[in-house]
Image 1 (cartoon, protein in one colour):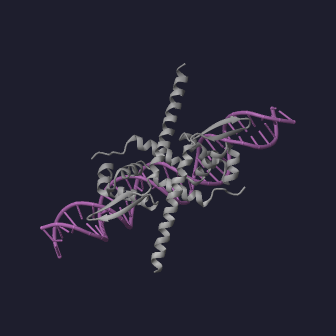
Image 2 (image 1 turned 180 degrees about the vertical axis):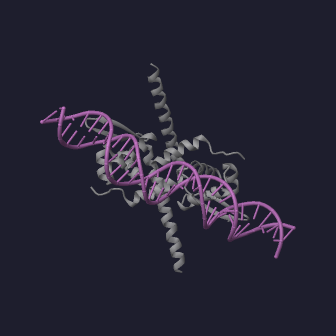
Image 3 (image 1 turned 90 degrees about the vertical axis):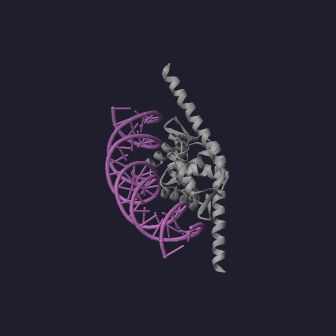
Length: 110
Length: 110
DNA sequence: TGGCTATTTGGCTATATTGCCAAATACCAT
DNA sequence: ATGGTATTTGGCAATATAGCCAAATAGCCA
C-alpha cells in the first residue's frame, strides 16, 4: 500500500516538534502564567541569550507564541493555552512508566 | 538566576519528542483505532520494515505504546488514549496559523 | 550623536535523528 | 531440520538540531 502518512501528519509533527525540548517546554509553561520578554526568560533558563532567542523563534514559527514589541523589549505570550491541558496527559504517561518500572523492580527482588 | 529548567521538563520533552514525527503520529492515530502488528503498519506507512520497527521502539521506549507477541506477529497498541485529545489542540494551532497567513495575504493585496 | 540595553543573525562544532541495507533473530508450519 | 514470514539489530551516510561566540540590528535615553 502507498504511504498513508499525509501532509497533515507532517504539519502536526512540526507543531509538536517545536514543543519537544526542555527549555521550550519551560518557556511554554512560563508564558502560560504571564507574558515575558526574552531577557527574563534568558535569566530563568540560564543559557545564552542567542540560544533562548532561537528557541523563541522556533515556537513563534510554529505559531505557538506571539511577540509584541513594547518599549525596549519584546514580550512573548502563549497563543494556544490548550497546550497546557496536554501536560496532564504527559504526566500520566510518566507516572504510568514509573509504576511499571517499580513493578519490574519488585518482580526481580522475588 | 540559575536554570529553572528542571528534570521534569527533560522527562516531558522526551515523551513529546517521541511523538514529534509524521510516521509516529500516524502510528499513534492508527493504534488509537485498533491494535496493529508491525507488518500492517509497514504496509500503511510505505517505509522499510526496519524503519517502522525503530519508530515503534521509540514509541515503546517513551511508554506510549505496548507490544504483545501473538502467534507469529507482535501487536502494538496505544497505551495512552489521552494523547489523541491533544490532536484537537494541534489542529487549532494549524487553523489559527492558516487564518493568520490569509490575513497577511489579504493585507498585501490592498 | 554616543552609549546602553535588548534582541536577533551568522557561523561554527558537536551531537542526535532518520532511513536504508544487510544480517541476525524468533517463531510457525511442513 | 528446513523453509518462510515477521521483527529487530548493527552499521552507515545524510540531514537536522542545539548551543556557544561574535557581530549586527533596533530602540531608548542622556
